[in-house]
Amino acid sequence: MLEKGKKYIVDIVDIGHGGVGIGKYEGFTVFVEGGLIQDKIKVRIIKSKKNYAEGEIVKIIEKSPFRVNRKCSDDLIDCGGCQVMHLDYKKQLEIKTNLVKETIKRIGKIENVKIHDTIGMNEPFRYRNKAQFPIGKNNNEAVLGFYKKKSHEIIPTDKCIIQHDVNDKIVKIIKEYINKFRISIYDEKKHEGLLRHLVTKVGFKTKEVMVVLVANGQDIPHTDELINELKENIPGFKTLVLNINTRKGNAILGRENKILYGYGIIQDYIDDLKFNISPLSFFQVNPIQTEVLYNKALEYANLTGNETVFDIYCGIGTISLFLAKKAKKVYGIEIVEDAIKDAKVNAKMNNLDNTEFYVGKAEEVVPDLYKERKRANVVVVDPPRKGCDEKVLETIVNMKPERVVYVSCNPSTLARDLAYLDERGYKCEEIQPVDMFAHTMHVETVVLIEKK
Image (cartoon, rainbow, N blue to C red; front, side, top):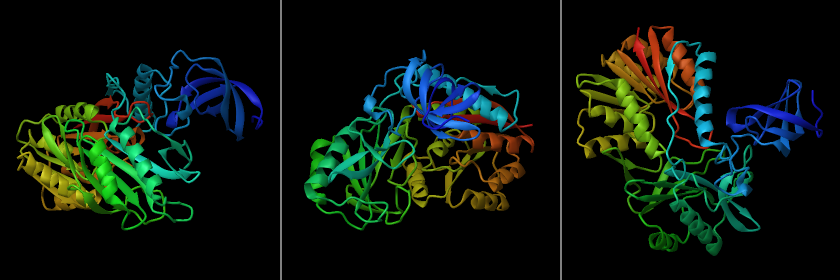
């Protein structure tokens, strides 16, 4: 057990969850924020437990060959927006590939599966089409940025190089608007004040911009002045939405939206398909890599035009419509009602009439469809981080599709679900990681699973 407050020389041997460096001191594990593989560093112990300690960097004695200069300010090193901006990008991809391999083997107990190298980006910057900025205050002035790692302290961020560059201008306008009109800012401890978050969405191909202000109330003042500022200074500005969130807790968005300007939607393309995007609807945040991911999913689905497909957790129908171009029939299932409304509009907008969309919990809707004798030759699932509900997996097994294509944002729950399917007659054949979230430790994967 290491002594709290004392300094030790630590060798970083790996990177763990959230990008934290995993170090060793005489075989004892020390977690070090900012440590990189092959760093030798002097560390001050800030927390000491029986089996591990946590430390902070005092001095880098021998720098990792994979350590690079951050593209953004060194002042933002504690920013929670990125985790490994200081790690060489090729090494990021290698680590993500190894993470998927290790997780599939350790949790899924699955061997002899082909896991490809992670597909990265040519330019892994300015790639995000959605940003969420918490709003706070410092010395009675508005502060917008990202939360400091492991806290709700806001680090002011005037420029974020993984977000679309239009956000730099929007943040400046919102900050000036709050300060000029003395708009009250939400205090999460007291549950008082008005403005909570700024959310933006950008169409990368259409250049259309949505601005969403999240408020602890039904109205915000001086909207005409704000709309004029956005119209004059933000190219492509299409809509301003007030999202009403009066609940306590960490949820960013509430369920109710009021359109203050425009139509409450923007549009964008993935490949040649056009999509309506609303404030509450899910749309992949990296449009460049989304095309890579979805084309791989389409390849794994191996459609000939005669198949019926279930797209479970379908969102606004992005994968559904990709599949519908090649399938006989596609059924999409999603719990968010606004997303299903968007999906139906998107299908009509793209002249794809071989789709049906259902709103509800996947674990309830999918078994109901099965009871109604609706069957799929191919099933696609793209669940949230918690993975597929067991009822969904059970119904898939009972349905006996030829193939399952699993799109995952969490290797751990993916591995768990693959183990479930493997025990019940389905073999994981191939896994393709795709880097949707450069400079973070998150990795997206698309998996081909076939009936044994």
